[in-house]
Length: 112
Length: 115
Image 1 (cartoon, each protein chain N blue to C red):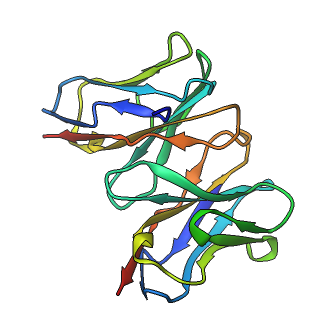
Image 2: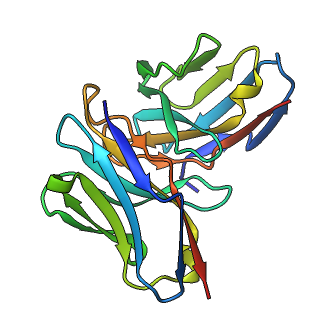
């Protein structure tokens, strides 16, 4: 399967803990995006990378959130000191430049 | 800033009936427009997109959409609904100060198909 993969698919954590998610994009894609989707809402843009460079960050990406793409391949999204409001589906997508974005299955985070 | 409004959080149709899902957008630049479908516990799959050129766009699974600049609309249609079409549908727009990189989504419309 050469699609976008995300791990883990589900994560349950207690408030205050740190969590990290991983996204592996389609291999030839140079752009990687992170979105957050809460219940009853459409996905909301968080940040994106072109190769290793983080080119844009949304105001939604508070100081507790950090994303990296160290070698221009996979990316990680870390949330520090999780809050119940962080409970959501975190979606990763990849594309070649500004062409069609292909989405992964998402990581569902539940903060207790 | 860009925005998308999807009218109706839920739309119910009978199998074989016309499907019409409404989308209106706001954009300060010529928009690129997209429709995505999301099945339970899955990621989003692109149904169709409009960038430039022909305003009637055909996508997968028999869906199509028409870009109407004067109405700022990009409604999704399918002549005959199938049970397998039951899913959530999202309209999205790109374009603006950041270029055409990021997508702004509507809140989604859940399509329910009854036998």
